[in-house]
Each structure stands twice: as structure tokens, then as C-alpha cells.
Image 1 (tube, rainbow, N blue to C red):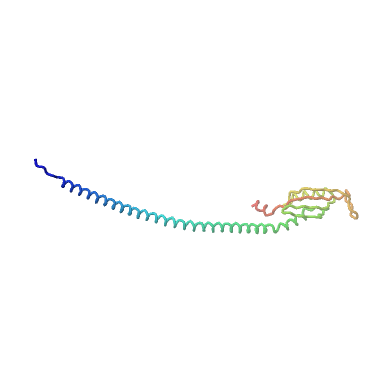
Image 2 (image 1 turned 180 degrees about the vertical axis):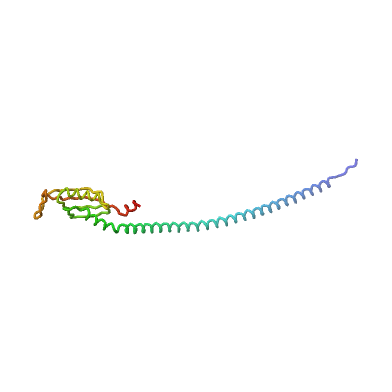
Length: 195
């Protein structure tokens, strides 16, 4: 049997296969690198797009924050103006109350009662005076309670004593010094309640 050496043919085939494998591996690496480059470019584009959107959102948020600050400032100015308007309105409503107070003081004062002191602190009135008798002080308190502009009369002190010299004697011959407090009622509050 003749011996044929097929070894060089196999060696050449092996070399060809190795060469093809090396080329295929190189092509796979190149294709992989290209795919990674394309994916990287795509993802970088998406990141840049999202960053641009985020920057736009930050600008809009800053603009809206400025508008919110401006709205707060406007609300504060509005509240201040409303408080001023309310104060002016209260002053306008309170203007005639002084006139009502003195008019009512004349109307509720019974004959034989004289005020020596009248002080007002807010809506509270403190009165001191002299009356011909303690019944006149009671009449004054009833008149204050019935008054539309005065109310809540409270007797603080009544001191009975002799008439002073040179004054005509009353039926009892005694004078009473008194101190009482009352409250001034708001005439506008009553009008608003009636409406």
C-alpha cells in the first residue's frame, strides 16, 4: 500500500481555518465596538436631551418661584391695605359715637345728679359725682341700662353724707357721692345687627 502524506494539506486547512477565525474574531470585535459606539452616541444624545429638559424645568421653577414671591408680596400688601381700610372704616363709624355719648349722658342724667368726673378708656366709662340722694343714683343706673348707647352700669361706691353749707336741704337732707362704671355700646353694631 502506498503511503500518501496528507499532512501538508491538513496543515494548510488548519492555517486557513485559523486565519478565518482570526478575521471573524476581528470582525466581531470591530462590529461590537461599532455597536458600543452607536449605543454610546444614542445614550449620550438621550442624556443631553434630558439635561436640556431638566434645565428648562429648573428655569420654569425659578420663574414660578419668583411669581409666588410676588404673589405673597401682593397678598401682604392687600392685607395691609385691608387693615388700613378697616381702621379707617372703624374711625368713620366711631366719629358720631362721641356725639351720641354726650347726648346720652345728658339724656340719662336725672335731676339732682351732678358729675364731677367722667373718664373713658376704650368703651369703658367711669363716672364720679354727687347726687341729692342714693335713689337718684339708682335712677341714673336704670336710665343707663335703658339707653341705646350705654349699658352695663355697675355701682362702685356710694357714700352718703350731710349737705354742704349754703345748699338747700332736700327731703332727706343728705347728699350721696357715687362712683359707677358703664360701657359705651356701638351704635353701628346695633344697626348692622338689625340689617
